[in-house]
Amino acid sequence: MTYSILVVDDEESLRYTFRCFLEHQGYEVAIAANYEEALAALPAGFDLVFADIVLGGWTGVDLLREARLRGFDVPFVMVTGYPHIDTASEALRLGAYDYIPKPVKQETIVRVARMAIRHHLVSKEKDQYRSNLEAIFRSVKDAIVTVDRGMRLIACNAAATTLCGITKDRVEAQELFCPEDCQHQCLKLLEETLVKRQPIEGQRFVCRRQGQPDRIIAAATSPLLDQLEGFDGAVLVARDETRLDHLERRASGRRSHLSLVGGSAAMQRLYSLLEALSEVDTTVLITGESGTGKELAADALHRGGHRADKPFVAVNCAALPETLLESELFGHVKGAFTGALRDKEGRFQKADGGTIFLDEIGDISPAMQLRLLRVLQEKVFERVGDATPIRVDVRIVAATNRDLAQLVREGRFREDLYYRLKVVHLELPALRERKEDIPLLVEHFLGRLTARFERNPLTISQEALDTLMSHPWPGNVRELEHVLEHAAVICRGHVILSDHLPADLAPAVPASAAPRTVRVTDEAALIRDALVRAGGNKTKAAKLLGMSRRTIYRKLDEHGIFGDFK
Image 1 (tube, one colour):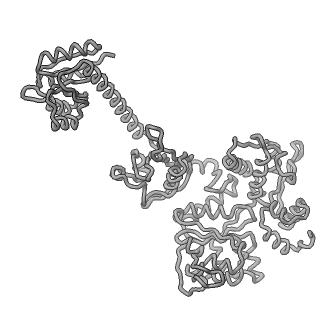
Image 2: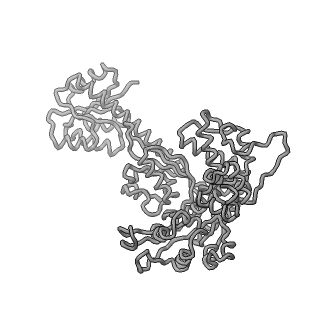
């Protein structure tokens, strides 16, 4: 490609010298003797201009200034016999590429011409790339936001203005990313990418902005690299999938809801109820057998509601004796009892503004039931050893695998507390009652195990899946998760076979056999079956059932079968 150069000088000898040197290198050269001729020639288009500083009553800087005013984007190299600091500064401020002194030398002219044209071409390519990139940003309907390593906004597209409320002024001011009005999940994704410097695949969540309707957002983040492949920040891509979510629900129901997995009719009803409850602060009682996912349901209630950006605090009431449970829930002051060496904040205080989940609520003592009743009624409590009332704003979600109504009839659970807890009742189905969800759960758990063990993706054979479908699952989803983890540890390939499953699982129904429905409803029978398979070992039976040792011992006593297995 041949490049064209304009030489502007009022000395004919210099014009001739420049033309000879440059044409010898293959450039096309035009000449102008003064300011007016140069302005008239510029519209023809040049790749470089050599301009003398002194042009009669004008200067080369005047020519450069006028060229810029008229929109001629061409590099200028100034030529002078009397360089002056003010003239040099003005020329460079206006965008001159370089200065060369008189007398001119051939090698200097050729070198500067080559470098100036190359620099200009690279700049044009960068400008074109930037223009193309801006056009892409404008056309993409997904919100794109980039932040630096300090979480300050670098850039965003028009979609981010609509979806996230980020304005151009905020970007120009380099404000922190969404300090107030952004859904916390976006912040967490960006912060995790900035810390780990690794991409985070798409996650779906409910986005809530003040004065805006709730939206379902799918978001992903990636590290932002500079020109030298160094870490420079992070980029967030977010998409509004509200309409898609509604269509999916209408078409075939959902396969999951936040941390819960399942597409059965029972799970669809549960999802709908969870969503209805997410917008109100009603106290909820969750019941279901051990291992059905009561804490996951409580977490879904919290994450789907307006308290999602506040704490979710879980307490297993059966895991602590009454004295420690009281301190754990309400806190204590220094010296309240032996070992209270300093003030301690209780779980209710830690959950202020958010949700507290009281698991195994059916195992607490009458005295603790009375204290909880007051908290439920007034949202006020005192720390152990202190009479100062503390008021908190918490949503209370309780759970149990016991029959609280029966405990009330037996006088072992306060009736007023029972009805305070059971404003809304969620009953989680046992896994044997929704066996059609087993393939989905298997897929979900194998995906998690693949990531956890950092290995190739795991799949399962049809025979192994048939075995899982035939098992009564007394330990419910938790038992299924443990079985798959066992199989993943044993399996050395990428396909889980029947041989990799625990030996005490029920064998698969042969293909030629008539189908049978496994439905065990007698809890005592389930426990007896687990004890038989465990050879009478209660600890092993508890693991098979997905229960704690304390729970299985209590149930053995309740069903009067403790003495049958010694």
